[in-house]
Length: 204
Image 1 (cartoon, rainbow, N blue to C red):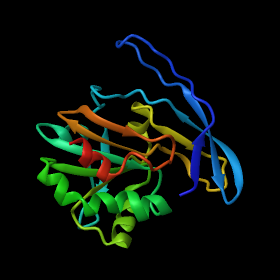
Image 2 (cartoon, rainbow, N blue to C red):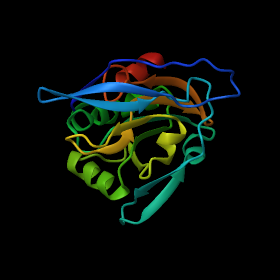
Image 3 (cartoon, rainbow, N blue to C red):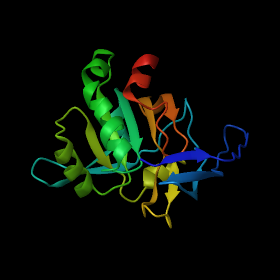
């Protein structure tokens, strides 16, 4: 995936009862050219309660099903990670395969659910899963309208750029128990430096 480096950061410290998103400006470097992109400063942190958003996916009969954050995390240890886009290079070659390869090790550490979240529709994610030859090691969940991504302040605005991805999600990985974030590795934009399966394993 194209490299993204942040040029400036806006940070705000506010009381726990108040939260809002600020915007960060980053530089997207694609084939020698630089373009400005923006991402919000996340509203979640370790200790945050995730919104009970709903995700969609296609079952084995290609029927659209939904599952909520509560379904995934109630009385469970769940690893949720997000990718900027299905079929993109870093997401396809490194991020998602890393969790597939380490699914067994994560379960040995007590993880009950491993799920990949993307602002793509469920049909695209089913095709991506088939293309990569993935079984049931990792759930591929569609946040198609970006509701969950916006709720946690993890938007990555790639609209009006050569790649034409629109508003997607920043890359991250997190451990969640009963809807509460216990571990959070949130990348700057689409970078891939701290959100791998190995990073989660080290923190467990």
